[in-house]
Image 1 (tube, one colour):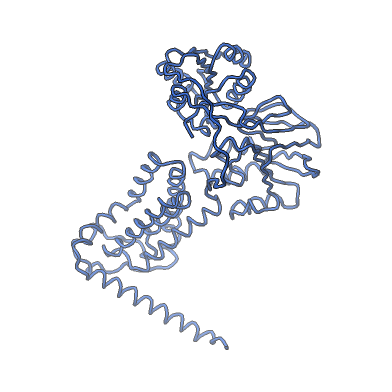
Image 2 (cartoon, rainbow, N blue to C red):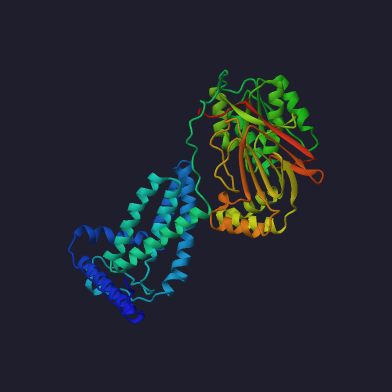
Length: 497
């Protein structure tokens, strides 16, 4: 069938547009002229609550305070998406297609807001923000997102009921906000909890210690910018029978831990992840369970075992709840409890963490990747009969989530696997391709990205020794490194799982 000539086609499109506009106005008038005490009472209050996104800020605060980890991530993603959507809507979309607001004279006085909006009508900013927040939360937690989506729909309806927008404006706003949220999910994929069945946790029977008898606590009071001193105060109050050892600047950390472990039934450590790794190694050698107090700056290990507060660790000691977790052994002698890395990965993490509290983790991750690749010092490594150049190499104890080059957390620490992520930068236009893949959420499918989950891994630095960072601390120079999992070797006090 032949296509219509250009002018008749344009005329047909204009006629369709006019028809949709007429339908839009008729639906608005039908809603405006419908007498309903319920609409008169509810819709003005709902639209007022959503002014300046106050409703969504309040809900995000509640989710972040009382929600589980996926809900808290959803609250953060929802707020970041809402902020971006508000910027796009008010500074971009409303200036593309000019449309006057509907006439408020058709709306009963009981429904009208005090101040009539003066910006363009298309699209509805309230609806766009509502959809952005709801879909952003839903990407991390679908049930909560579904409930918020229903609320977002009501907010959109309230904008019609109070005479602020035509139905088409609301639909456009909802579509815009949802689209930006979905695009954000492609750029920074949501964390998907591991659904594969695994072995049940390996628990150990240990005595309850309601007052901390037999526990030796080694804490660096200066760690975490003073957090260590606060942790000490909490431990003294909750576990009065525990022995307290304060680390000084000139102490031999390994010797202090060894002496403490030899006379203790439980070795407790408060400090950064590097200090925790040193304590874990001694606890393994001396055959005593480990308790970890979150006294460092980031406390990755403590958070991943469920002891993100001192109170949780103390409760686990008092109740005697212990389960075993994996550790990774480097070259048969050094323990890794969190991560190891070569190349510029430590710089990438430092740059991202420095900015994520100001601009959010997604944007901080993109900037950190750009900054790192621009100032990288590539390393050539050989593994599994292949040689490649990499600027970013990450190795984790147990599987980290999400996939991609922003691993942030572990749901289990006893899966018997090493998580390895490598970005290859030696190919033509590699850096440009990596950044493009990251921006479009396609990094995990890029041929320049490698992700392995294995029980053992070894590599050789082709051009001589390279610096290996372990658990956030700069380690020694190595030409060869071999990593192997010690499956469920370390007993740790943690909440029952």
